[in-house]
Image (cartoon, rainbow, N blue to C red; front, side):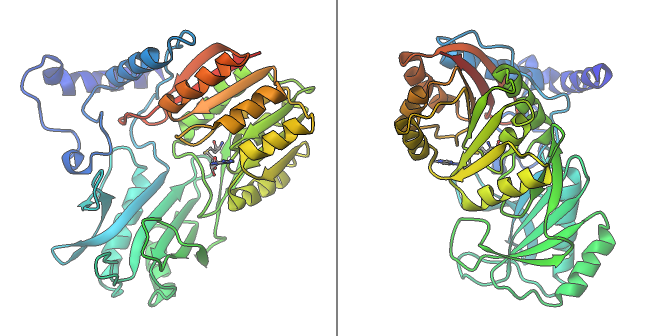
Length: 403
Ligand code: SAH
């Protein structure tokens, strides 16, 4: 580990010496950086990125408590295990890429420094097969063509790989031969799913999945719990750091077998299922029906018997719980980037848990929500940032509050 760290440090030092000396800025290490815009920090040494995030979080959250040193990634490249490519044309050739930031212009990307390399190779292979199978990529303006997106999900722990081809219509010409040709190039693919998206929409996935090869899902594990991932499942993109994030969060939660825990905004139940081993009971609350279905299946697979899930708006559900006089010992909450809302936060205060563990991917909304909680009987004990998104401006933060 130490050796690897040193190697990365050295690599960065040599590559960015010029930059650091504020001499002529050298060419970006990513050939697509200017057009893509996804990795705002790609040309900043990783240590500097961490320093910058630390400083910004301190300015934003320092008034609540000391901000512990951010936990960075040992190897901050190729960490994304879910890769999404938009398909299109450039000079008559099919291309795979991303939409330019804040625009709808497709930028060709053959290899990305933060994406899983295997996933990128698979996408390029598919692109290479399109012509001989006479599969046209989709054109948004004319609403013609077939292949809209490719998504690849690589399991970090089992090595299973799911390929999702998002199509405008359910019919893929010579689909079985296409699957055969792709599997010949990449025998490591364990399942291929056709997803039908026939709407003129910016949403990537449509509602219908047709399994072309394999079981139609993959498994991945986090902190020793196995998760069933279907094409529609929400799942963190950086498994290495997610495991660290959850471990830190649960360390702060200090659960005991007496504790009644709420996992609000629980997705497919990841945090709650891991927590259920240390807790008395867990209730997961999640709005998305598909995610709740996954969560219940995951509980069954892992033989977790002390966990239940409610499909509801977390705020509304907890208001009802509070009205019925229910209590909770610990509330773990992991809302979307926009944060929580007053209905939810006020019901948390009425349920009066001893500890709240707030996991946030939006530090601005976190600061707003902490203002509310600290004005209503809670004290901020710990602030622990974890870098889930190296090379980008984004960062995840765990906050422990106690009554
Ligand atoms: N804790 C999970 C998911 C976090 S993402 C994980 O770590 O994987 C945030 C989740 O909140 C999403 O699954 C989203 O569907 C859900 N969500 C958004 N608004 C919600 C609401 N009002 N009530 C309940 N869940 C909500």
